[in-house]
Image 1 (cartoon, one colour):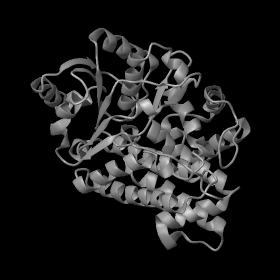
Image 2 (image 1 turned 180 degrees about the vertical axis):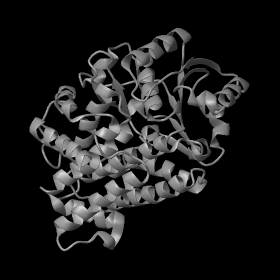
Image 3 (image 1 turned 90 degrees about the vertical axis):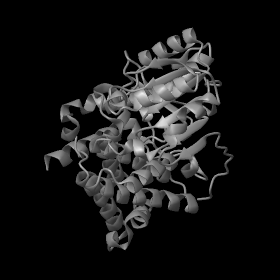
Length: 396
């Protein structure tokens, strides 16, 4: 299949390297003087980073309004509170310090402050976000690539719909990747981030299109992430491996892997978003459970791309007698990697039960109507079958 034409521009300046955090206040000050500072829960204080950044921002003469407490799945109410606080404060720049959830919340706040419009309508795809305050992102948990993309994900408190908004206005102006900030990240969070970044590569890879250079790059991102994750699992303070994981997470979803592609499949994300929305499952951890099972299901229908991916990531050690054998071997190798680094691969591992499958299928369809999937169409029947396979796997 011919590659698709594309036009692309990255408006984000990416600053990488140990010690880059020391320049955070200076970077924020390039875009504004009244800062809405968005961060997560207690980890920023526990690590001492909050005090360090507070001193920096004050020394640079910046006025700061803090919005903390952003959780794993940011809520619309948190975003709205941030918008209200930011407007009252007169914020002219948003500074996020955290992982994908914090960055997504900060992006949504930046748009909400800049636009006098219904923010949730943009997540419902009823309108496009056209303006946002400048955003500077300091990454403390590599996973989502939100520091260099145009996407934000927010959950509605009442309906529990977890929806995505995208707009060029949501690209951060500046992103800081300092691997030293990740040296003390707990392994479960680290490995959940690895599963998240791998899922982004997979979703873009398996959409029924071929873009040989981009596909090859995607394979190498996954291979590099797996190797680095194993090194971090053995030695959590391995700076080189932590640096590699940061790079992999950013480039997995900064738009590069979409060059010449259809735009991705995203079936696994649709199913996992239902888990996160209903049961507050950590997104990356949920994807570690959903993604390999979706791959196994889809490979039964279209084995060739999964065999190609398996060979590109794992090499000749997974080559089987048939294309289908190679595809299966690669998927099993990926699932085994997740187990090796302590990630769950079953519903039970997420604290979920088979009896919750109907609610998950219903929620996935409520948030974005069925059918979905670029490689293989998925409706309620197919989504149920995939979740039942996950349950079966846990009972073996």
